[in-house]
Structure formats: structure tokens, C-alpha cells
Amino acid sequence: MSDLPSVVVGSASGAAVGDYVQILKPRVMSLVVFTGLVGLVLAPGHLHPVLAGVAVLCIAVAAGASGAINMWYDRDIDAVMRRTAARPLPAGRMMAGEALGFGCVLAVWSVALMALAVNWVAAALLALTIGFYVFVYTIWLKRRTPQNIVIGGAAGAFPPLIGWAAVTGDIGWGGLALFGIIFFWTPPHFWALSLYRAGEYERAGVPMLPVVSGPRETKRQMLLYTLVLWPVTLAPWALGVAGPVYAACAAVLSLVFTGCSVRVWRDETDRSARQMFQFSLLYLFLIFCLLLLDHAGGGRW
Amino acid sequence: MAGDFRDERERTLRARNRALLFVLLGLVALFYVIAIVRMSGG
Image (cartoon, rainbow over all chains, first blue to last red; front, side, top):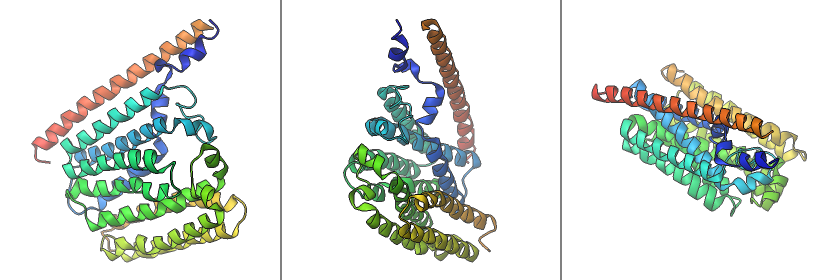
């Protein structure tokens, strides 16, 4: 009888509401929602505010669904890594099937609602994003190649493009520019994290770049990506989506981001990598904030 | 011990059911609003 709690905790009824929220990866979701919202605001044209809200909701739910399916598939390696061991699945608070079912229901629901309420292009992009994250990144690339987050990072770059398509009904150059910013930002962001978590990734058998090629090569590639981000973050200005003040501020931010990468290159400890990871989050947030502010100012800045 | 655990489990279930109810009610309201907006040409 004393064994009862440990047996039932792992059953379907053990998961609390908070566990269901946790498997949606709310922190990742918040960044996805924000970038999707910026794509929606910057796109030329008009979308009824209620439908714009629905589009953002669908993007958020789809991101959560992808996160839940990812946690279902990665529950074995999550249990090995300290950063993820307390998640509901490895901690035994939720059954694997519950997470998978929850994720699949939300994925279908978000795509269907986007198609019915907004348009088919945005819905197709949303379905592509979920499929890319689950099948291409999680199942195919993550455990096979150190380029996992380079290619898989595209999934995280889709939300502004979806927001753009929700308004215009097609894929515009402006939306692609926003896609490019997140796509080229993802590798230095994740490699900064994996530099100081390399041991955990190695134990879990995930071939992150620092594990496979070592910190030196990782730092070199991080620096290259931060340099590529210079022209990429200026693309919205070149395309007429943003004004010159945005361009100037984006250039300063990219300079600081590159500076972080140079510090990581020179530093043999984990300290600068941790700082770069933190700054990378702020960098992306500020770039998209600047785009929003520029738009609010009528692009005259 | 088992009684405490059963109470805890019932509390969890009640909270989940309440959350599900709110989600379903939210969906009904959302579909209602979407239908009005779409029919008004939004």
C-alpha cells in the first residue's frame, strides 16, 4: 500500500494543469508570439483585430504543440540532462501518450482554426512549421548532425512569416527578411548555450557542435553567424520595411552581438558564453522591438 | 498516506476539469466572435 503514490503519480491522472502548461514551453512560446506579432504588424494591408488576435493565438498554440511533441520524443534525453530532468515527462508526472495526444490535438486545432478564420497560406505555413520542428529537427536532425540547429532553426524563424502571410495572404520579401533574422540568429544563440552545457549534451548523445567539433570551431562559426547578421538585420531597411533609425540601431546591436562573440572567442571559461546567450535573447527582442517602433513611427525614423 | 494522496489526486482532477471547461467555453466564445467578424466582411 505504501507503494501506491509512486505507482499512481506516473499515471494519466498525475499531471496537473501546470504540467500541461509546462510542456507547451511557455518561454519559447512568448518569443514566437512576439516575432509572429511583429510580422503581422509590419505586413502591408489590414486584418481585422479579432482575426489578428486569432492568428497570434494559432501561432502560440502551434508553438506549444510543437514543444509538447518535442518533449514526448526527447523524454529519454531530457531525463539525462540536468536542465530538462524536471520536465513533466522525465519527472514522471505525465505519461508519454498524454503529451503526444495533447500536442497532436493542439497542432491540428491551431492549423484548422488558422485556415478557417484567417487564410490557407498562413495555415499551410503553420502546418509546415510544426512538421519541420517535429519531423526535420526533433526526429531527424537533432540526434544525427551538429548542424541540427542550423537547419532545424528554420522552424523557429517561420512565425513572423506566418504573421505576414496572415495579413497579405502570401509570402512577401519583408516576411522573408524577418525569417532571415531569426534563422541566422539561432546558431550563435544555441551554440552559446551548448558551449557551457557541452557535457550534458555529450552524456545525452546529442551531437551539438561543441561536442563534435570542439569549442574552438564552435566559437569560429558563432562569430561568422554574427557577422552574417549585419546585412541580414539591415535587410528590412533595404526593402523599405523599416527606416534609417532602425538600421542605425540594428547595426549598433549587431556590433555588440559580434563583440560578445569575439569575447567568447578569446575567453577560455564559460562566463562569456553565458553572457552571450543572455544577450542573444535581448538582441532578438530589441531588433523586433525596433521594427515595431519604427512601424509605429510610420517608418519615418 | 494513501488517503492524502487520493485527496491530492482529486484536487488535481478537479483543477484539470475546471481548466478544460474554461478552455471549451473560451472556444465557444471565440468561434462565435469569429463567425460575426467573418460574416460582417472582416
